[in-house]
Amino acid sequence: MKKLLKGQTLRWTANPFTIPWADAFSHITHGAVVVENGTILAVGDADKLTASHPDADITDYGDDLILPGFVDTHVHYPQTAIVNSWGKTLVDWLNTFTFPEEMRLADPDYALDIANRYLDLALSNGVTTMCSYATSAPESVTAFMGAAQARGMRAFAGKTCMDRNAPDGLTDTVLRAYDESKSLLNAWHGVDRLSYVITPRFAPTSTPDQLNALGALWAEHPDCLMQTHLSEQPQEIAWVKDLFPDALDYLDVYEQHGLLGDRGLYGHSIHLTEREVASLDDAGAAITHCPTSNTFIGSGLCDVAGLTARGVPVGLGTDTGGGSSFSMLRTMAATYEIAMLRDQTALHPMQLLWSATAGGAQALHVDDKIGTLAAGYEADMVILDLSSTPAIAQRAARANTIWEAVFPTIMMGDDRAVRDVWVSGQKV
Ligand code: GUN
Ligand code: ZN
Image (tube, rainbow, N blue to C red; front, side, top):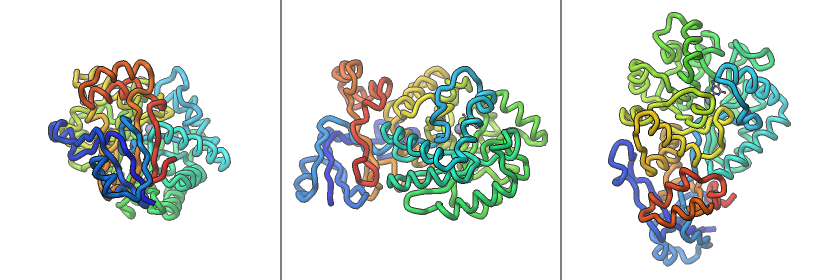
């Protein structure tokens, strides 16, 4: 059954960090998107598309904005129930709140409950694709993959490997990390819209042997993504220096163990040296910027403008539960605020929206499938009401351009702005 969605449409035509943002999009006020069998057939003028697809079932969203679904490139779904736990910085926060909660997901029923709860929250915020850490329990990967598969979503996840500096109930071993990751990879990678991600949590919780084993697994499966954390807090960086005295710096730990590559995703990447930035750039690796987490647990101000200007791909991540929100609107707002606070760079709303959609898809190497509204792309969409609260509506009423109309929703919007979400051509 063909479906036609009417509304304002925004389509990305280029990366707005490499050419002027004004040349990187096309906006149609009375636009439409035609979808069939989970795929976008056409994007264009509503009257023309209505005439050329008379058989389509029409949903009229009026002035609402039709966008590609949001892509959250860094989240810990197992931390859903402990989001906004008060008063700790990274290492204490992990030990006090995170590790005890992650231990609970060894129970497959609890893992499935949290996976369903998280995915419902993500979808209600317009997030149609995410790249999530699970816990060290294989059951937590199985629960998440099954729940995402049941919703028809394009989703990424992996078993979070740790063989030291975590409680006994949460650590694995070198061999278990390799074997369990491999068997989950074989079970889920490429099934429907799911991808397995090789996931060493971060340098302090893996022995050199475990990092090597996961580097070897990645070499055997180079089409997989690999995700980890990098240079989030100064105390963590000092700890890595103690644990790996021979490494040049934090990134070099990963490089020495086969864990640097163009399909690598390096979470946070705040306190980088020039050598590390150059090395990420040479490798073609992506970083994930997690602004609400970086403020909430006091990590610092990531140089998004500097990294993107050098061509390093940057995806946005909520990083819940270290991040304080499931909303990519809130995440874009925090991205804007941090760039302003760091060096008074005003990121344009086009750059923010692109980062939350196509930029994330690029970091995950699926920018040929999702992240933009164009024929042939998968039909994952979020429909935004640009007047969802009185405060937003009165500001949007003064707007002269689509960007003035959308910026108040980026800065003040939440799940009330999400009118509808479509996954694989179906309204969910
Ligand atoms: N570093 C290692 N593990 C984590 C985690 O779960 N959250 C955050 N924010 N940083 C980490
Ligand atoms: Zn994280």
